[in-house]
Amino acid sequence: MNNIFTAATASTPEIDFKFDERVLCIKGEAYPENAALFWGELIGNVKAFIDQNDSRAPVIVDVALTYFNSSSTKMLFSLFDALNELAASGTPVLLNWYHDEDDDTIYEFGQELCEDFDSLTFRDHALQG
Image 1 (tube, rainbow, N blue to C red):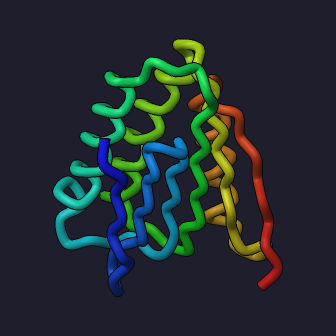
Image 2 (image 1 turned 60 degrees about the horizontal axis):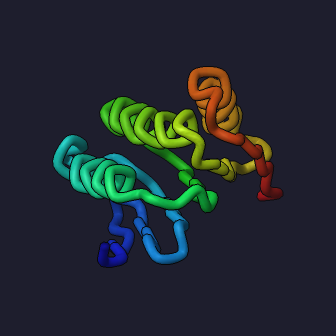
């Protein structure tokens, strides 16, 4: 698969999926006008990657979102659900969740992900503002 890089905009995060390195990075703010369209492409690519996965090498997911709206929240759950299925099938998936140490909303969402997607290896990273 070809690697994916989408630069951040004012309302969408940077997406950098290096399939060959098995690393997905998402950072920035996420409140796209059409969340299903924006996130749908990434989720489709992740599912294609999973379908073609023939390795048990770990997948690393780095997420550093400073804001996301409710429609992005739903799409993020779909993304993490797919990654959780990959982890449940025997491929380790490490989710690094980065947030400002003072941002309770982002922190709590990360804790919810940790509880809901228990096949993922979750690591919380509080960053000083």
